[in-house]
Length: 468
View: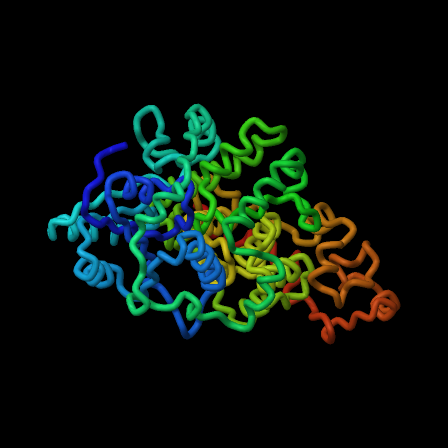
C-alpha cells in the first residue's frame, strides 16, 4: 500500500456518484489518511428545476447512505465553496474525475490553476469514459469527424477493467460531515410534473446493477432488432445511470463484452464516446452547426407549434406518443428521439437548438455531448449527420416499428380503440371509424398541425436554397 499522507484530501464528486470504479476517490484513499467527499450543486434552479434534479436528489441520497452519511452537499459557485471547505477542513489536496463539456472543462482548468496557486495539491482522473477524447485519433493525430472509422479505431483498443470499490475499512477514513456544514439533499427542488418518474425509475446504484444484470441475462441477445421497437423492452435504459455516474461505462462494457449480441450495444456505447470526442475537439458544436451552410437556414419562429410539439399535441400520433413518454417518464425511446427531432427540424422548420434545450429540461439522461450531437445529426447540420433530405415520415415510422400501435395506444389512450390501419394516421379514417373508436379530431385529439407531405416539400425547398 502506498504511503498515506496525514493530510486531508477532498474528493470532489460530480457525474461519478459511485464507489466502484471511481479513480479520484480510490487515489485519495490510497494516499491520504482522511478524505472528505463533497458534491457542489453549482447549477441548482429552485424556480424551475429540470428533470435531472429529481434523479440527482435520489442519487445523492443513495450515495450518502453508501458512504454512511459522509457526503457533504453544498450549493453555490464552485471555487467559493472549495475555498470555504479548504479553510474549514484544512484540505491539502483536491481530486476529481474529469468533465468534458466546454463550460465545466474550462472551469476545471481555472480551478486547477487556482488551487495550485494556493499550494493545494490537485489532480484529475479519467473516470467517466471508456477512452479519453484525445486517445482515439487518426493516423495523423487529428480527430475523427465520421463515426464508423472512429468506432473501428476504438474497437482496436483494449477495454480497461473497472477498479474495485471502496473497502469497508476505508469508509472509516472518510471525514464525518458536521450537521451545519452543508445543505440538505432532501431540499433539492422537484415539481409536480416529475411525480410519475418514481413509477418508472429507481435512481440507486443497486437498481442500476439489477438493471444491468437483467439486460445482460436476456435482452442484449436481441438488442440489434429489439432496440428499434418502442413497445418492446429492447433498450438497455442505462443512460440515466451513466449520466450521473452511478455506473461507469467501463463497468457496463466489461459486463457485456463477449455476450451474444453485445457488439451492437457496444457500438452504441462508442457512439456516446464519439459524442464526447466531437464536443471536446469542436466545442462550438454545442451551439453552432458543424455544417456552416445551416447558418443560412431560415428557421421558423412559431411558438404555437413548438408548444404543441413539447406537449405531445401535434396531431401526429407517433410524435405525440414520444413527447408524452418524455414528459411522464423523463425518458424517450431512441427511435422516437429521431422521429420527433426530424419532425421539429424539418416538418416544422424549428431550430434544432430549441429541441435540444427542451430535451435537456425534460430528459433524465441528457448528456450535453450526446444530446447536442444527436440533434445536429437529426437536423442534418452535424458531423456524420443524416442527410438533410432524409426526412423521417412519422406515419411510416409508426407502421414499421409500431405496426400494431401498442406504443401509440399506451401514450395516447384517446386513440386506443382505433384499428391498427388508422392508429398512426387517424385523419385518414372515415367518420364512422372515428365515431366507433370515440375519436373526435379537433376534440379529444388534435387535428395535425401540418400536412406531412407539404411540410416535407417546404423543407426540401429550403435545403435547395442553402446547400450550395
